[in-house]
Length: 278
Image (cartoon, rainbow, N blue to C red; front, side):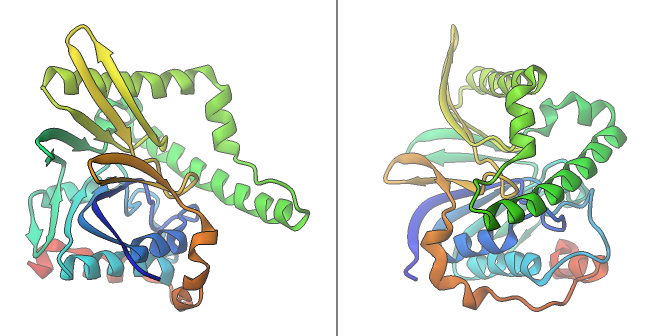
């Protein structure tokens, strides 16, 4: 499959190391693009919910593919989120084309972009981390149950169903939280004079113009690789949301077969520890 060149590709909320992560689909996507810059906007490795007996080969292949892309010239910025906050103590570490940071300021065709994960706006995380972590484990379990349900639905020719999307769309507080998150990020970006503000965290892919009395900004969110399987791409002076479509990746199924080996926490940290490889 021929690779698509894009100037910028942004992914977030992959949650490697959890049952809900669609690692094989993400690997297919990464193999089909050739970005000049790749931004990993937080929660790539889910250290909060990491299980020592669960890190499949497909999840490790995603990390290796990112490293391969960096070795071929792609500039990779790993922006930390709340689920991988353990890596924040290594902020500003750079190994070749891979840089670890808490935020990234980007110039896109003369316009300024502010890229960060977005957990700084989440009071549940800042005020009660233990509760937030328990919520993360509950979310992971919900996704696992949802997967089993969808396997059954597919066998009967029924449309897939998403518990979490249904909850988010029907609960007013969740809808308000998403709206408040977008407005808060946009207002701060306008005050700081940015043209774009790019976040992750809320698993809600979005591109929309936000305007107030002080100015306007383009708010963008890359979504996630648990439910939406989306990324942000910038090419030919235009932003777009990429939505993964399995039909476009049929030819890559065989080459993405992964070994049954499960990686331990120690093996994973051996691979990603920036101090050891500096």
